Length: 254
Ligand code: 48F
View 1 (cartoon, rainbow, N blue to C red):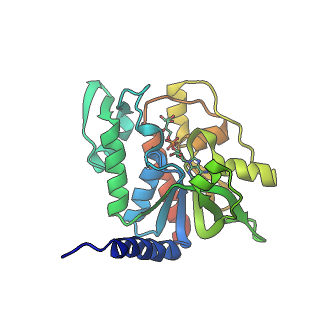
View 2 (cartoon, helix red, strand yellow):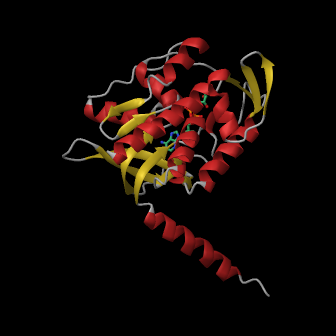
View 3 (cartoon, helix red, strand yellow):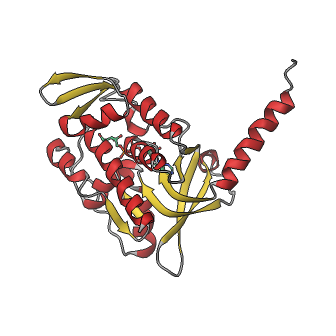
């Protein structure tokens, strides 16, 4: 068989166009493909929820790839070890209750779990605004290709609708900031100093629906709440992502 370049191009355009059109309406849009967003998406997918991850960068994984200061190892504490097991991420016990995993394996296994569960990934796509109509709920997202933003090109965006949005954009809490800016009804307090114990114990508590239709998870949850930061210990990110998924599932099934 001779390979035809046009067929290759047509296959890519046709398949992605089909998926893109289908996902212009989804149950849950997860904004940000870091550890909290990936965990959340994987669990939503496993529960049969139509979910897409929108990630502005080329690669999925957010701040997990780099481990601690580019040493590609992450630490996960006892409370989240079951999630390492669930996703098949290997680890060693460093001291009682402190588990060390390879950051590259962790990102890969979380991504694979989400993909296997049917989650679609829209990378190189930036969420630049949210949609809030008469009912006062976040009902959709305004998106554009990241290179358009990077080049500062004047190109109008497209929109997609979703029943729930998860802000998993990390320290910047991008979606929550948009609501703060445009409505004044939500305050993003901004994250505090490094204090791993406080930050890790707070992050699941701060994972909640902060605006109708918008759930915050991971560092975005801590940023909204004015909670501390934690550095390269990732248990809270996994637990927060899991809890955000449960919150969305509960609301969707109500
Ligand atoms: O920062 P990130 O990894 O968020 P997280 O899941 O995890 C935080 C940890 O990595 C670490 C930490 C914990 O130990 O403190 O920092 O809370 O991932 C956030 C993702 O969101 C993407 C961004 O590129 C990154 O991959 N993102 C940010 N803004 C946008 C976005 C946007 N406007 N549209 C789409 N994606």
